[in-house]
Image (cartoon, rainbow, N blue to C red; front, side, top):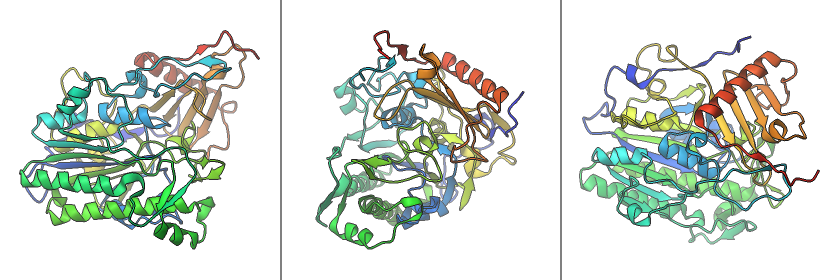
Amino acid sequence: MKTTAALFLMIPPAMLNEPLGCSQHTNKPLNVVIIYVDDMGWKDLECYGSTFYETPNIDRLARQGVRFTDAYAACNVCAPSRHALLTGKYPARAHFTNIPMESVEGMKLTDPAQNPFLELSEVTFAKLFQKAGYRTAFLGKWHMGIRDEEALRRGEYGFDLHDLIPTEGADDPPRILSREEDPKEIREITDKSIAFVESAVKQKKPFLLYMAHHTVHVELQTTTELHAKYEKKAPGEKGQDNTYMGGMIEDLDRETGRFLDKLKELKVDRNTLIIFTSDNGGLSQQHGVLVTTQAPLRGGKGDAWEGGTRVPLIISGPKVLKNKVSSVPTIQVDLYRTLLDLAGLKEYPSQVNDGVSLAPILTGKPKGNEAVFQRKALYWHYPHYKSITVPYSSIRKGDYKLIVYHEQELSPYGGNATELFNLKEDIGETRNLADKLPEIRDELYRDLCSYRKDMNAQMPEVNLNYKK
């Protein structure tokens, strides 16, 4: 039996009929800005349905471009998503599925060893923009190992400017700071981003800017002003009511607005592509206190369910459609090819890339752009234990999503290994259809096994010392 849901519809880069690297208003090269937020969930913006957080500037960005309802991070935790964004490779292919951690004792499985580094041999999209004459900058949270610090300083990872702006983001109780302080270094990242753009404009150079905010990752910090505002505010729908989270998100929104206004002041807004997204779903709890909720999605950061991987994605810029909402499923490895496609740049011939370009969805060109290319599925692979997270793989194919838990799949102790959901009918993943639709379950499982084989994915092993 074949899956009845419609397959993902896109078009490959080779079918584009015209270069997209220049603005519709000027002949200048396309500038690129990526605003990457830490732990911001799918429901944490007003334009995605939050009734507690206030995000007028980010909502303005959504009205100026395309907002994706079914966009996914490449992983349910931070570091693998960041690696996938820069390289265009699934974490499973790169063997970068987690940052190294202390082993979890007493578990049924043992974690595979990990390479904690973004290797210099990886062809990041920044290298291609740098080679094309762009000024390139990374500012904020890196969260990957760097094997060669000197190469980093020389810009060989693709960034002429590479400023790892630190934060106090430890797992401490929430804190309120004075109005003059800068919780989560939001203003510092914005100030330095503006200075970089001003420098590039002065040099008459196109620019690629990757702004990687620490917000809204713990520790939860906000100013006295914003904390007082949200203390007085009624709770939002589905339980969003954390005053620190509200303050952090509004602070991020204000600084995003200030940055967007500066682009306009410098007269580069009309030839600048802006991508706003997050590295994984929103954190549900900290110290036993609700941080945020992604309802109606199930779960949050670290989970295999939608709340752990579905994220906001907003893209605006020249030739990008205005005020469009797309339900085409996409994953962060797609952004690599999308950037190159829109800027008119080419990949290295031998380069391996797991994404597809979203340019046809963004521009509406060529005609019938959502009815030409069939994409098989989206995949996730996380063979590790971490906090509440357990080793799993999953696949979304059309409306169906299958989760396979490695403990039950691989351990001799067995158990129910699979969960199958119809996301169109059950976005909250409340009804496991694995036993009711065995043909679909088995089809997706075969596809998932083929994916893991093609990726040479690392798998956990049975812990021979486990005592039941």
